[in-house]
Amino acid sequence: MTDSLLPPNASALDRAAEQVMATHLSAIPQPHRALWNPDTCPLSHLPWLAWSMGVEAWRSEWPEAIKRAIVRNAIQVQRQRGTIKSVRDTVASFGGAISIREWWQTTPRGTPHTFELVFTMTGQDGAQSSAAFVQDVMAEVARVKPLRSHFTFIQGLNASASIKLAAVGRPMAYARLDMAVQ
Image 1: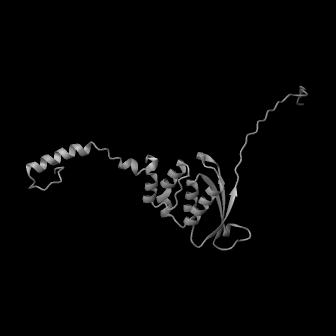
Image 2: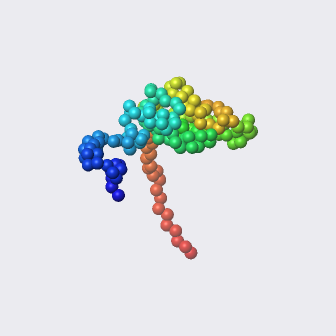
Image 3: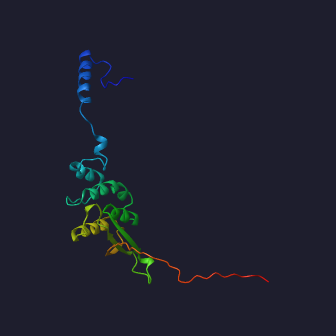
């Protein structure tokens, strides 16, 4: 088997032209793998990659890490669209943590096909939890949630601090007891 695309009845001139073109074409870089990988795709080409992966919402003001995470999770979210898993994956793409409580998990039971979504933004990757950013998260959740379900959005706050404790122990009384068994 030969690597030529020419038919068997090609002339010598055709074969010579094919070899010359092959040497010139092999010098042109072909970064197809890098362009189709969300982690290695240049930032200028990322919107086109997102479009080809089926991402429906795209904001130029989002941080680069969030854009890459949304493109990275796009196929998984599209496969599981309409499930709680897709809601979790979508919010995870934005760098937030969520807690979901469905209607049958509340006491007393809530309205059927409703859920509460507690969104906690950690502020990682340079993303600020502005009103526009939270609105974008809510729009994406509304896009991937089950169509019959309605949700209540609650924004949480995650704060952490460290406490430094020091303790000193000092014996106040010491007594030596001798006991004999009789």
